[in-house]
Image (cartoon, rainbow, N blue to C red):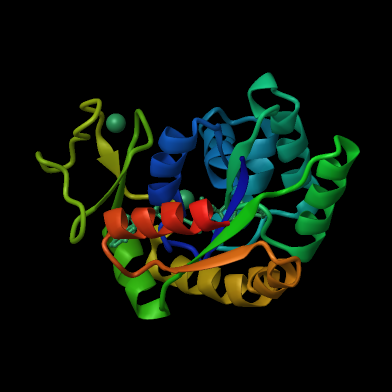
Length: 215
Ligand code: AP5
Ligand code: MG
Ligand code: ZN
C-alpha cells in the first residue's frame, strides 16, 4: 500500500499515521519528523531547514526531495509506505510521480484530512510532543495521564518550536497557497479520499479505513 496523508498543519496527519501504519504494516515517512531529527542532531540539512521551519515557511523543494530520495532507497519502502507531510507542492508531487514511475509503481490513495482553521489553532497551541518517542498529545483532546510525561515511554513532553501562534498563522497561509492545489491535482487522478478530520481521532481512523477498503 502506498498512501499519502494530506491536510493542513495540525489536521491530525501524525495522529492518524501512527494508527494507519499499525494496521497496514508500512513505514511512516514524515518529512517534518526527518527535518526535526536533523535539527536535533545539528546536521547541515537540519541547520538549513531550521531557517525555514522556525518561520513557518516550507523548506525548499530541492532539500526536501533530497531527504525523501535518501529515505526511499531504504529497503523497508519496497512494499509500500505512508507519506505524512510530503508532497507539499506541485513540484514535489510531480517528482514523487517520476520516482514511482521509475520503479513501475504508483500511489494507491491520497487521504485528505479536512479541518477548519479555528480548530487547527486550538489544536496546535495545546499540542505536546514526547522528546523521546515522538508520541503526540493534546492538553484539551488527548491529555497524558501524568502532566508533561509520555504515557508510552515516560519521556518529557515538549512544545514544538513552530507551534507559536504567529508561526501557526504563517503555516496556514503557506498551506493555502502551496499545498492546497494538491487536492485538485489528486482529485483529477481519481485517487483522492477526503475525510472529516474534526471528529474524534478514533472515528477519523475508522472512516479512513472504510474509505481505503472501498477503494
Ligand atoms: P510537519 O511536521 O509536517 O508539520 P505540519 O504539516 O505543519 O503538521 P503537524 O505535524 O503540525 O500536524 P499534524 O497534521 O501531524 O497533526 P497532529 O497529529 O500532530 O512539518 C513541519 C515543517 O517542516 C513545515 O512547516 C515545513 O517548514 C517543513 N516541511 C515538512 N515537510 C515538508 C515538505 N514536504 N516540503 C517543505 N517543507 C516541509 O495533531 C495536531 C494536534 O491535534 C495534536 O495535539 C493532536 O493530539 C491533536 N489532534 C489530532 N487529531 C485530533 C482529533 N481528531 N481531534 C482533536 N484533536 C486532535
Ligand atoms: Mg505531523
Ligand atoms: Zn514517549
